[in-house]
Image (cartoon, rainbow, N blue to C red):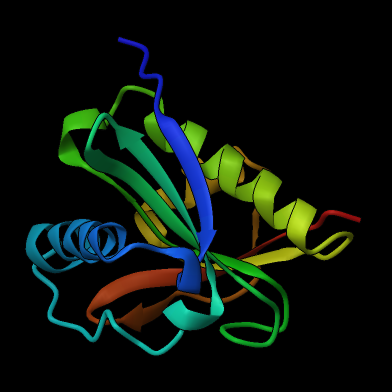
Length: 152
């Protein structure tokens, strides 16, 4: 099944209360409940970032935040990559990542993109030309690696 979503990119101050609620709900569902990981999701970075949302009618099913350079890493970053269980294995995750990269490249021209990736998703991110730049480290009990996509 091919999903056609309504994609919206907004700065934090442009988000409606309903959009913010849906973002926090999806992130909690994916990172706290599904991954059984208690961590501080609201980390004071959201007000400084862009939020890419993929809507299926009134349901938020895909989300990333695009973080300017100097906040999480030296370079711009894509984080909190999340899809609702209902759209997994449909290609939505690939659409989400490709759109996130495109927006990041348009917002921050000629800069690499740096991410902190869960290790089990290494091949997924490599399919978008990210390459590993760190040793494996634990973050909230989950193995991660840093990766960079050069856009020069």
